[in-house]
Image 1 (cartoon, rainbow, N blue to C red):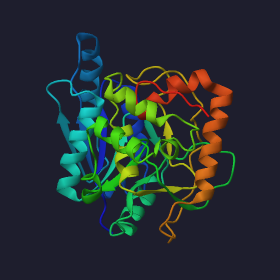
Image 2: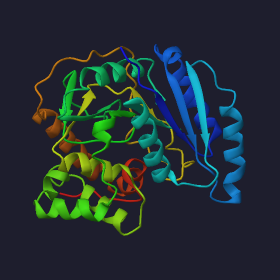
Image 3: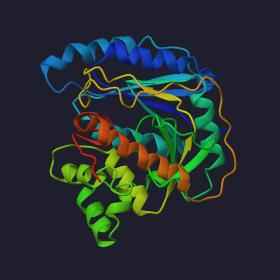
Image 4: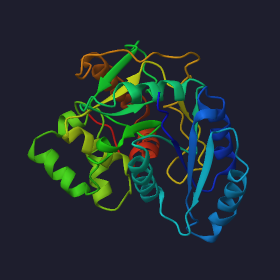
Length: 305
């Protein structure tokens, strides 16, 4: 099996970065995987100490087949850092696994991601594979496909990433022309359209909402496991785009999950589960959702019926 390079995006949080790398190093395929790290430059003097400390730590990292560090001379911002880094690496290697500096992975994360990337590489209806699953109450299928993407530990291929459209206004226009807003919003259980509108207005710089819209408009599907291999460790208020919230916290899978053949179609049951989850979050934590979802998709949002 051809292992995908693991690409990690960091900024000014050395402790979180260390936790992410230590968890990743415990993965079965870590010693055989290339680790490529994009370290963003500081945007102001206040961030400089954290950036410098993060880079000092990164230079000590071992435990992988190779470690390459790209130190940005200026501040790219999270979105531009990820867009540029993913594009460069996936074009060179053909496939990629992407992490940010506040994600803790199960020891079985790389196994699932690499097996999924291998299995679905030539199935063009599938645009990405993911390691994070929302903390839903229902039991999900072992693997399932959704017309959806997120940003908490994911992977893709060169041809799939070539569909990424950076022009949010163009994406929004196509969604409205096709009268696809309700479906894009999971039956209006969560206002992803609003997130995209705010990106267009410059109120967030989210790459992830544009990636979701690009995949959705192309009619593509993404693969998910029934339990999460990724835990978001950044909900302590330390990040540029996150606050102290815990409604997306999950228990990491303590065992491997096989990649199994599936009908190449969206799993309606899993979609219904996600819709119910979004609605339940809205009802229980409306004020928190607006702050917490920005970690994944942008500056702010709201969930509504």
